[in-house]
Figure (cartoon, helix red, strand yellow):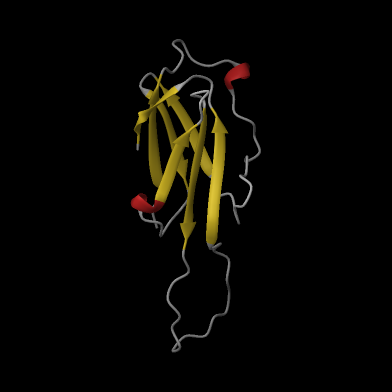
Length: 116
C-alpha cells in the first residue's frame, strides 16, 4: 500500500543543509493523536517533501497546517479500521488505527498555500 507524499514548497537553503538544519531523530507526536506514523523528510531547491506512511487514508482526509512561524508543519488525520468481516477470524493485528499526527520543525519557512 502506498505512502502519501506531501510536497511543501518553501525557501530551501541554497548550497545544502548543515547540522543545525537537521530535524530531530525522534518523531514529534501531537497531543491527542493515537500514533505517530513514520516519515521521511527531504529537502531540495524547490522546497521540502514529507513522505508519511499513512496507507489506506485518502488524501482528502489528511490535514496540513503551517504554524504562524512558517516553519512548523503539522500533518494529522485518522485511519479508520476496515469494515468487520464476520467470515474472517483475526490472527494478528499490527496496523494502528485512529487519530494520527506528526509535527515537523523545518529549517526555513514554507508557503501554506503551496502545501499539498
